[in-house]
Image (cartoon, rainbow, N blue to C red; front, side, top):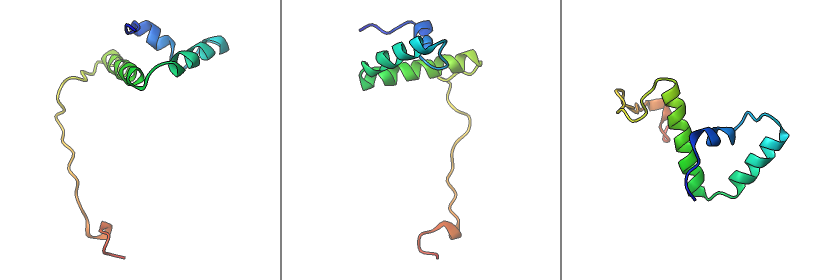
Amino acid sequence: MPPLPFSELKRLTPPFANAADEKGAFQYWKDQTVEAKMEATARLTREHYRELGIDADKPMEKTLIRRTVPWASKESN
């Protein structure tokens, strides 16, 4: 099945215009494979970020560092 255009994907996500649209969207997503749902979610997320002016493909400038503290160790009570 070819991927839906972005406007159609967006129509199949909340908020819905009415109960009939919600029912149609529910049926559409119910019939999709997990892979198709994941791909559609990734597309929706990337397009949303683009609308906000965020380049999702650009490497992050920040890094995540985990700092351990003595009171968080399993051995301490």
